[in-house]
Length: 217
Image 1: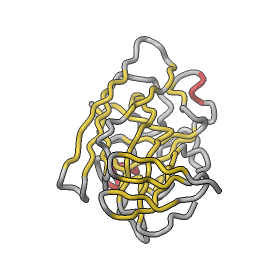
Image 2 (image 1 turned 60 degrees about the vertical axis):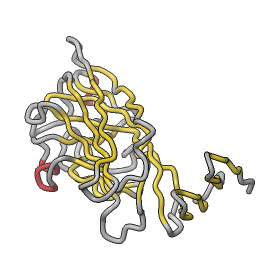
Image 3 (image 1 turned 30 degrees about the vertical axis):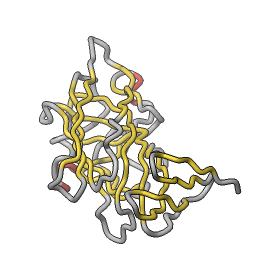
């Protein structure tokens, strides 16, 4: 296996082609692994936002549920970036209500070996909220993400992403490129405007997780 050594400032990152490798991060050697959460290998109820995502790809998806569209968005709704599944959260979502708001990505969960993560990008959109289905008419919204360096108190950064819909009944998700300063985080919260009437949907979330132990692929 051939490793590439990349110099970033004064840090040396050892990047391997297939397995997690040791990296220099804030003066301490970490193992790191780049993840992409597409949710497509999970099983959910078609159209229904009732299945908790829980721990997936080294992150706990607090307050988020899985939606399996199964092509239901052909007549109305939001097309997943990577069919057929996406994650959703809203005040109508039973998982969001049960696990609490706001919805979040977090490293704290039972048997977690992840210390922190960097969030890079995700695809998003919004639909009219419903208790029965998340495959509904798309609607304009603002999704806000808030990153925390520790569990809840020290805010790293906040960023807004606007999703605009005209008169169409179906539309595509759009990509959110996250600010480069969303690094070294324990938790990222997701909010949406008009959360009582709007369900936010996310897909293809790219992030890097860090641990002081080898991260299983």
